Amino acid sequence: MKRVLYILLTSLFVFGGVVPAGAQVDRKDVRRGNRDFRKENLKEAEIDYRKALVKDSLSLAANYNLANTLYREGDFEQAGKCLETVKDIAPTSVSAADYYYNLGDVAIARQDWQGAVDAFKESLLRNPGDLQAKENYIYAKKKLEDQQNQQNQDQQNDQNQDQNDQDQNQDQNQDQNDQNKDQKDDQQNQNNDQNQDKQNDQDRQNQQGQQPKISPQAAQQMLQAIQAKEKETQEKVNKQKAEALKSRQKEKNW
Image (cartoon, rainbow, N blue to C red; front, side):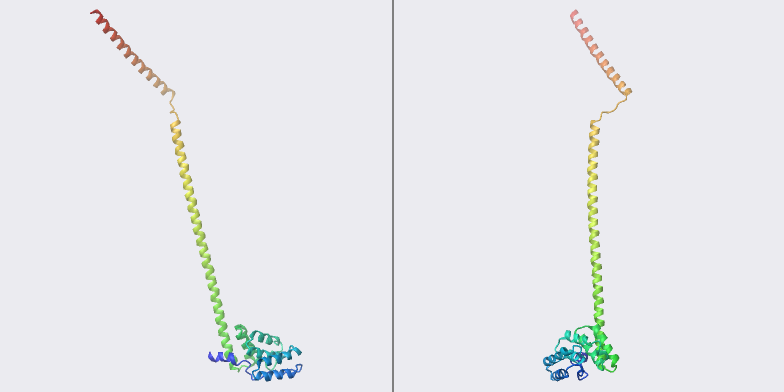
């Protein structure tokens, strides 16, 4: 793995040279840029290659070597754009394998693991014996698998979290429904108790205010009994009066 990292950091554009200037490009600017690049004068090399691109924006040599320079300067985004500019002509050039190799290195620097795998695969198709391309291909493929596994794990975690949230919401809804049902039952029982109390009160009032119903025959019997009782009482009174009178008469005769 250390060797792979060393390759990624130091072996970019390892074929040892730069693409020769095209016929439509000012060879002077490209050659000057090549000299500055070999001397590690990267800023000067960048300026030289950009001058060449002013004259021919599709120059394979200028774009390719400018991408090398920008990569060395750490501007991976711009390096990738330079290689993208010549994507239609570079694959058919004699440096196609190196083009894809460099494209793969730029993709790795940008952590575009799918792009790196695709680029190194194309490089190996054109140069199967390139060991560095093989190692970088294996490295990029492993990183891509790790990324995909992590994405799958994150997705699974999100799904589990969503399910947990859904279950929690269902539990909360069930608790709320149970609470509402209990409150409804309590209210219903309270209403029933109140209604029963009202009914009991009404029954008591009815019992207190209602006169007992007596049949005519029973009423007649009761009347006769009362009259008989009065007659009996009157007879006793009369009897007592008569005895008292009789007693006074006896006393007078004496």
